[in-house]
Image (cartoon, rainbow, N blue to C red; front, side, top):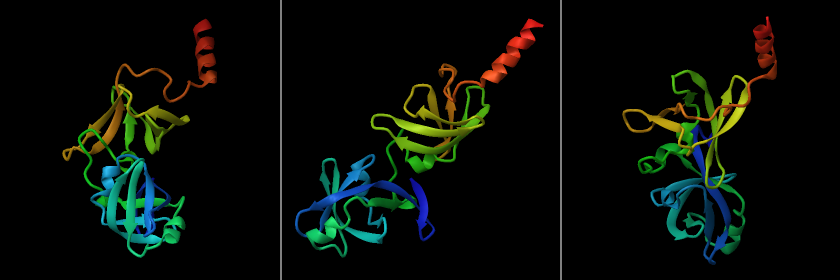
Amino acid sequence: MTDTSAAGTEITRLGHFLGPHGVQGGVKVYVLGDAAQFKALRRVYVEGRGWLRVMRTTPLAPGVALQLAGLSSREGAEALRGLNVYAADDELPAPEEGVYYFHELRGLSLSDAEGTELGTVRDVLDAGHQDLLVVTHEGGEALIPLQAPYVTVNLNAKQRPQSLSLTADAPEGLLGEPDESDNDAEVEQDDT
């Protein structure tokens, strides 16, 4: 989730703290996405605590263990259990080709194969094996699977997301069913 609560800095949630790792203040992090993104970070934003410097990052399933400045006891690490951990968007490492951070997709337009704008991506949800685009459109909101073969991420000159589009073979009804009153009006017109 991109937020601006860190003194005006846009931040993205990377995961949450699971609990202590060892007795010297290490803390385990459940990571949303790729745990390797932590290796390049010099600091993280901890919910309710602010920015903390990352002293050491250790790979650990299902994520990483962090040693944070000012955290030197198991009790201190225990106090972080359940808190969310964020990074500044501009400090995240560049992802590999074809991989996008959720904050890069929020706010982008979604168009059909002909280029007609259908809606705007309000959010992206991590649903396990499939990320879901939360698209706000004229009729409300819809969830569209990001990794579906009929969803295309259109890139800008820097090879980062610029917009999204559906291919011509996208299933009908992705944005919800058409209003039945519209269908009734069409049927009545056909009978005359």
